[in-house]
Image (tube, rainbow, N blue to C red; front, side, top):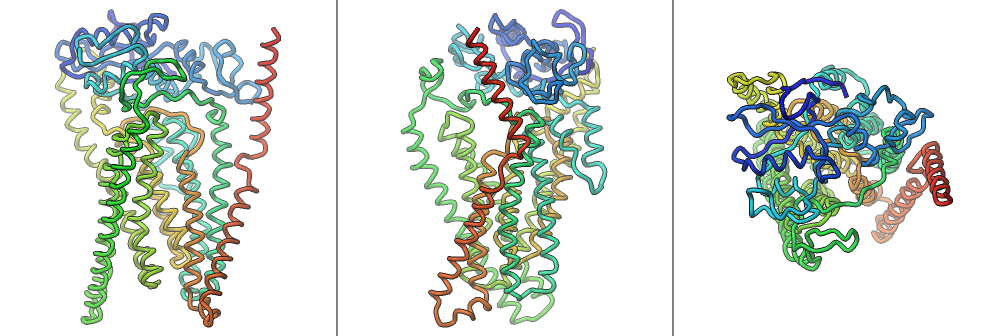
Length: 637
């Protein structure tokens, strides 16, 4: 951590580097404000977080904005408490211990530069999240904001609208360097994944690592697909080879990713981090009770009530949404039939172009429905009131995936297996891919970037009009960043890649250019996602992560569906049908046998390819052995 941003020297604190910003409500009660500041700055033994804190501006008319930092020693002790894993001098990865701090690589002097800014900000967030009430019954000045021993103060202040937001500050110089190496240069090169992870944390680093890996993995499919598209359009015998390669490819890339991911996360230290006991998520509410595991007071909620909410509210709503998606799909087919009839009657250039209009409209409608349903899914998942964040996320992902699979793929399955129109299938797939790519790039990056630039001009003019005795660059930066939209996580980004993987793995045997379009999408996605992370959204808090989580299961499930789909498409081909003219039962049994064989091959490949490379397994086993030996020695003493 480099010292900088020397703020006003006054009765609050001596100089420190601002890492995190806390914004309180403008009309916050003065007693509550002083109590909250005291809680943050008090020593740990007195129930505080022992962090450094001061107002951004000392003025009666100033907003209630505070900057938070910490001493180097406090941050290093926080790193040990969280369980950060760092590289030791002998090259092995070990949990960080403050007492042995000089034994770690890159620990120089008092360790001021040992932790990255993202790690320091995560430590501060962790301390603020774990700031608990002791004997207080409510937040001072707010009788309705109830507290009880063990209740998170920050969560209560957020739900009571006393605390507006907490966000980490950007490091403008480091961000400028990262932007230059990341997206400001248009060149064929690997992304600076380690630098991205160093600045944004493991979760963001893993997403961009997976995006880059997936893009590179698509290139062989794209290169093979181009000659198939131009020279073997109706040669289904060759499609058998292409489909088989597609299915093996979809399995191998996921297994190789697991190995690549474990290598990365071992180097970053998160593969070895021990999971903390999961606390109730911020939105969880219920009657105050005792947790039987921890013995602490916390809200309790009947699992029966939750199940009733899931099966009597959420499930019927999801089913109704799926019905509506299918109803919209049937309207699309009516428009498609009308356009085909019109083209047959007119036989003009205009009528030929009109054939693409229904698919384009439907692709736009699909994107709109996906986004509206996302808000509904979040509302329903919050309504279900899950205790743990992991459970909340799993239910949200399940709801969104079910609807998106039906909404995005139902029309393609209907064209393929009900209408049996492979020409229309190719056209629809191409239109969906191209239209969704253009819409996503515009809505996710270009439009927010343009709006942010306009807003920034207004904020700069407002800040210049403020006559305050505070460092102007910090004042301007805080006001600019606090008005930025919050980054909501990698959910939508992974969902986009999941749908893209589905288009390629399910139907590329009838439209081999799908992989090429996916590569082009991912290349533009690399730059647009980098732009929005650096220029559009607030800096997100870093989060330790050892894998892409539940999304790996989603990708593997899509791979299994792809086996069944590709085998069914091959069974529909004229060449295969001509071999079984006398008996459709034999055709069905043959296709089923091929499908079972390919599934068996898929599971064998998944079993044969280890999730972790040999050297990583050895290092993990050695560390576990040393930990057990140390525990034995401790017991003998």
